[in-house]
Amino acid sequence: MTRALTIAAAALCALSAWVGQIGCGREEKTVLSFWVLGSEGDKVRSMVEEFERTHPGISVALQQIPWTAAHEKLLTAYAGDATPDLCHLGNTWISEFVLLRALEPLDDRLSRSDAIDRGDFFPGVLASNMIDSAIYGVPWYVDTRVLFYRSDLLAQVGYPNGPKSWDDVMTVCRVLKSDRYNIRYPFFFPTNEWVPAVILGVQYGSALLRDEQTYGDFRGPAFRRGFDALISFYQKGYTPVGMTEVLNRYHAFAEGYYAMYITGPWNIGEFQQRLPAEMQDRWMTAPLPTADSLYPGPSLALGASLVLFRSSAHKEEAWELMEFLSTKEHQLEFYKATGNLPSRISAWEDKALVSNAYVGAFRRQLERVVPLPQVPEWEQIAMKLQYQLELAAAGELSVDETLVSVDEAVDRILEKRRWVKEQAREP
Image 1 (cartoon, rainbow, N blue to C red):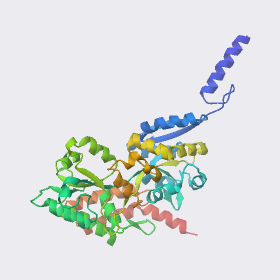
Image 2 (spheres, one colour; image 1 turned 135 degrees about the vertical axis):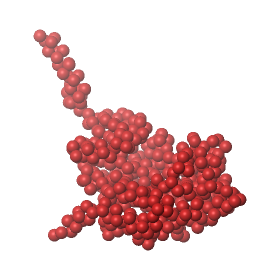
Image 3 (cartoon, rainbow, N blue to C red; image 1 turned 45 degrees about the horizontal axis):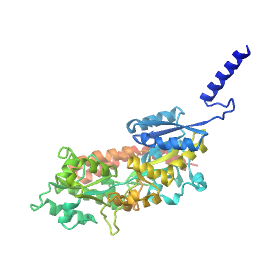
Image 4 (cartoon, rainbow, N blue to C red; image 1 turned 90 degrees about the vertical axis):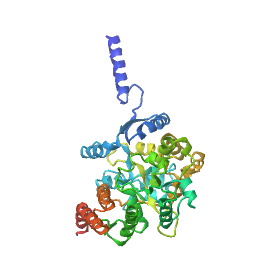
């Protein structure tokens, strides 16, 4: 009988340890739920394992979620009160989850943190994590847009380091389009990308939305100037209308079918892998041209951040993991594994970044980036703008018709936001 009881007790002890309960002299482990979006889930796994080794009282349940399914899964989790402890979110999603009161403000934790210095983040990037003066995300990696260009072709027309202004860009386009060079499309502005239209609008001084971000301001004079400038590339034949003429943008770039393109840091690796060996010293990156006298012109503060969910029962432990992943050393490790650019300014002093000629343009550009409007409806707004851009580029709508249509659609999209604002003002 005693032997049977001993065996039973041992079995119960093993089971208790397995499920993480206190028993038999072993302490309970806190289990953190950490959702990571996209391929970054595989890349961060080794760092999570290191965190578990250095924090033996914490276990991390890492879940990788495809970007295409992430938004719906997060909303479903919120509705079912099943959000993770912490998550990796695209910066444009933060305002939506703040509106739902799903995210924990981080100002107090940041002010007490020895691991994270908020002054070590690019100001424009940190601003993209701020809603109504409160910080809801810690920038994990940054993204912005710069100019990729054929350095050999631009050197021939006097701009080996890239054009500094949009007037310079037009000069380059005019010369490259001439019979002497016969470049089919000097600049590639894909009609299925809204980012260049927004960048040019911002560069000409547009805030994109007005009246506390409750109405569209796309037909305002500032955005109109930027949109006019963009449409002129299509009208002059400097960029293709539609997407059928550039089926493979890497091949077209190598062939000299186009010479300039605004894109992001992921294309550094793509250009290095997809362009032939003889092309590797014939392209370069540069900060964006400017519409004013200050170079470079503004670009967008994009990227992704780490957020802490308000419903988490393990906020302190989750914050420890956020601090761990946000150190300069781990941001550099993450950059080397993924190519995602670090958000900590001090990390950019590492030779892995300093020695990369293509990355330098991003470092300079990050000093002049601005956040997108921090409204949950931004993705809908961007898709509407993109659709209307395609019509304007094809000449199916005038600039005036396009921007009036965009504003009308945006005003409808923001109708609920106006109602909420009005209710908040009522006594």
